[in-house]
Image 1: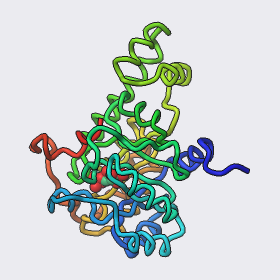
Image 2: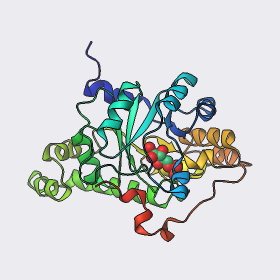
Image 3: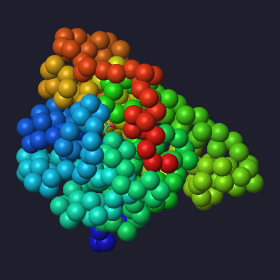
Length: 293
Ligand SMILES: O=C(CO)[C@H](O)[C@H](O)COP(=O)(O)O
């Protein structure tokens, strides 16, 4: 059987649906995530709120740290590389990570080009704010998307904005005539063939998860209700007062997002959420979501 085809890469994305992928910075956090029911972990040297607070250049993590996480858990291990940094991506691939996140949370390495992802054996996830960005990443070979939100803030407002925008743009595609799709492709910077696929199916050709600013079980439920098929959560868990408890609650919320009584039960007594920042107060040069086009 052929390995690392588009179908096998997409299969991995499909398997994560309904779950929560948690950012972790060491093996101990990875164990907490696994015990809480995370469907995968994302290894990175600092969670986004720490990156935001400390500034400087953030890069792919030390291989030793990634390997210690791979040893500690049996769930898939993802890791981040900088946008456009194909050398970091090749190193992560050599380490045998299960997914690479070409992430705006790290400092950009290339302000013009994203990684050509189709030639890698490992699948990639990328962030998007709208349909054009989503389709450009798919064209480059991404097997999974996540709306960007504004990572490291604890403010879910951008995740909501991006999910709603994507959903309404997809709806619009389904009612366009074929000649209108050609013009729309030019506006979005996306291939006509992908727009035809969306018109026929009413959805993206790869799964779309939500990320950035999810801090409570209610935030998780809101994103699922707006069409996210799974969730990435980082700072909201490991910078809160009781990470194991909040991690479990957010995993449960991703499953029971349509059950307000269950959500009330699991939202009770979680301790303090992470220290949050209102996105509206952030200057534009401090917005991670604006990195990459
Ligand atoms: O970049 C990511 C997705 O791969 C992070 O996991 C996600 O955005 C975390 O954001 P936050 O810290 O706000 O939960």
